[in-house]
Length: 272
Ligand SMILES: [Zn+2]
Image (cartoon, rainbow, N blue to C red; front, side, top):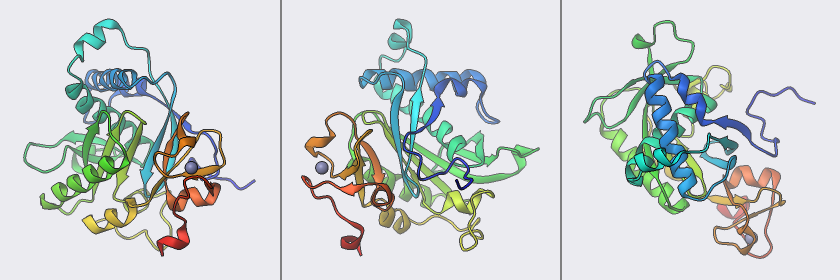
């Protein structure tokens, strides 16, 4: 058995994430606001009919799945977040914060000012003086009920938005979708470039390289779906996906799954 950290591509089920982790806050998020973000996300997930825990997929550079849990919402919480557009925005902040913690060595350092083109500044988790060591920018967007096409379109839109903001810090865009549910994290190269532990020899020195729109366009164009228990991957809308559908990049899916014979999804050979 090869020793791996939490990025093992062979793990069949997901790691566990719990929205209550947000209640501890972050350098730039008070515990109170973190709890608020988590509550909003919980309302969105329940509105979309999910039960606890739900399998959620992350697509982008790496495909990952998580088992996402939360504390059941109260009637009062659902009345509070009765405006689901509002809940989606805050809930996306919550899930994006959890994903930043799960996928990188970064955490939220502070809220960005309006007009800067992004939502949060990120710093290293173990930074002694986080206020002076910004490492990246984060732009977050939420979609209550959309498909992977909308997810990708939103990511491109947000990347263009972050591209116009000045500053040389790399920009993350995380789009959180609540109906499947899944999230898209981009740009693809940044997790290796920023986090010390996962840097590979040929990608380790790109810390200050600003993100570009083409890099994400090239990366997110081939999304396929797998099911919780099956061994095949599928196109969106395949009849085999009625029970569960977990989005995944094609390059990741082909390592562990075979193409479905019904919907005939693309293969890596066709992409080249
Ligand atoms: Zn299929």
